[in-house]
Length: 606
Image (cartoon, rainbow, N blue to C red):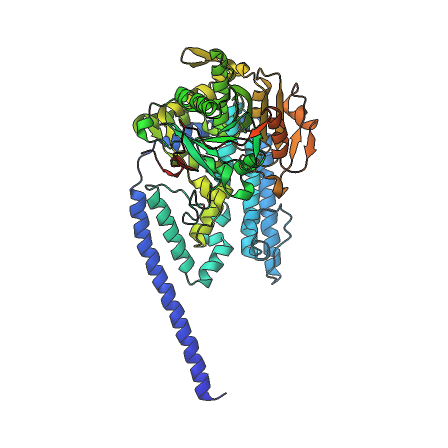
């Protein structure tokens, strides 16, 4: 190689180095500019009741007092915990130092459990990252054990201390910080800082979109449009009032069952979760089975709905929908389905119908529904007086509970999946949110009317009036035992919103002589949206509901595949003979617009 060639190579290398340095400098300047924009965005944050920002200091004071009492009354247990933790930490340090002192760039033996947060091989192979990971897991174990062994707390306080301690432990995971996340650091180096610029832009955009609050965008908002590539089952809106649009779906069979079916989805979210894509659409599947299907699409309320309560949902929602469907189909009876909060309200409606002597409902199906709130499950950590009082003050001022609060609350029930992992991807890695239909729906939230929110939280969640038989509505006292129509209830094994054992306990108290309970694998959404074609999640059945939940599960038979066909057979028995398929609407209820309607498209009510 000649001297000229050497000089040329060195010049090229130098130029490339200078170019890299310039790009890095440019990106650092961009970060500085974006930081100023971030500060401006966060300064626009509106004042929120402190009780809606997290647990009150009183809870941690109780925990500290309980810990101090334990130290005084049972010091040996505290010392045992500390000595065990110190011993593990010291052993961990000595092993790491020993390997390094031998000149080996290796990690000591790692026998800890697999954790998908640490899936990057660097967590296992790089001494620095492996040491941090193992020490974090030891710290987590120590905190978890200390909380588990703590005495002197009530059951509710213990549950809340455990939950919020886990939240803190999860928040401090080393993969949540740039300096201790090998994947994010490698990405930043590869892109010469561009990933950090893109990530900060994503962060600023999210905070600006939520009035100074941080709510991680879970899915690409430009990738989906309801009615275009989500919620595309054929049908039409055949009725509309201020509370809901009634969507009737087009038949897919020449004949249908005589008794029509109405689905009441929860108004905390939008109904197209049941119609994401044709292949996993429960709505499409039901029409394929030969049922005349109507679905209620609830309005997304604004402040004008402040005084709408549970009675309005029952009267102007459930009872009105039932009456309209009876008129359109010229039938005296209907079958009904209620999902989550809509299932709870369906139970109230059935009790109300019994008081009225109205036998319009032939059978009822409940998806992941709580009717007895004596055990509130994981959600119970947010149902203390401080949190509910904060919501009460919020809706008194605003007239509604903004969708932001429900979205954030439910996200924290699965914080690693719905907060930290997306935040790492969006903000540290600088990636765009994925085009994921389920996560898009999850982010398409709805507001809740002020009065209804307080009534639901106070009278049902906190005071459990319905299960206690003392729920008052328009002069009637409603009771769980009034639910006396044939019932099929589907609960989900890992449901973090409506715990299956609580759902089961409610069903057992129904006055119905015919009760079927099905337990699906998976959680609140995936356990329900579980098409047979996927062969993904199985389900359990047991006809004996005269025993507690644990015994029921112990004696249950497991079945591979979806519960949909089993429910379809049950529903068929309550749906009458076959008749020619019905057209949409009638002369007095013409089609107002195509499915999925207009209410589902609106961010707030006009």
